[in-house]
Image 1 (cartoon, helix red, strand yellow):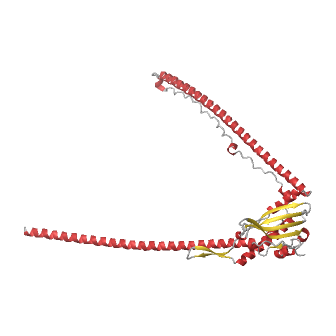
Image 2 (cartoon, helix red, strand yellow):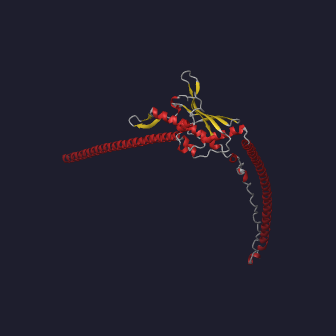
Image 3 (cartoon, one colour):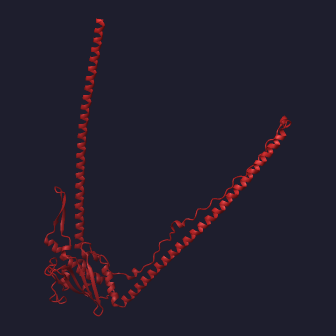
Length: 415
């Protein structure tokens, strides 16, 4: 018994030691797994952090590119704007300002008639196809001894039954065909009815289209008739026609968006002089930015202003160019020589600092004779010198809204 107890105790201790070893192994495995997970997490964190930094760096780069491109676009637009303002006279020299009134006559243009869905005919009805007529099949006659033992009678009964069944099938076939024919006829009638309705709507739509075409033709004819009268009146020196022609010419005079102008004019047939007033933007409405810059530290776009001299020089040059350009456009467009002279005023509307009331400031006042002005080669002139040559009254400082001095009279200057 003692031996058995000792063996049992030995086995118990072995089992206990084995369990401890297994437990310790499991603990070690767990610890290894935890450490591996921690390492994996740290690796993931490092990877995420790197990716985040890379994403932030890329976003910053793209943002810088976008802002830089924005500045470049602003500066490009600014350069284009100043080029336009600085070349107001050159804008018109390459363009013939004459308006061919006959070219304004219109020809009525009509879109093709489009009935839309009505243009599609109603789908045709499929042809009626009848099923084949039932075929009678005679029961086979008895052969040999079967005919001698009542076979003939049974055959006769079978024939009678087959004939009755066939007659019934034929009757059903006729009845079904009659119904199919009746339905087909009704379907054909419905299709014809729908097609007739469609054609009626097409005719109605076409009538409306023809009416619209007639109206377009009438409108074109009325406009052309009015234009023909205008052309004839202009040819015979009717005063309104000359004024309206000048209005057409001036409306065709395109100025930059940054320097819009408006015209007002009247014509005196007795003296053949056109009195013309041109309103230009006041100095404060003209761009004054020299350059746009991007400040990365503040993530903002800043402006650098033009010097006062640069602003004054540009505005004065623009005023002078507008004056010479306007004289040129009218005289060039008047091929028939209806206008012998132009009394031109170029100025701007502003608010008087002394009264706070609106006032008009004349910046250039000039009278030009057609014969003299037409002899100038405007591609080579200096607008200020041209105005001085014509005896114009020109503001000494247009940018400061100093009015042109007209105390001596415009026509007396230069004499």
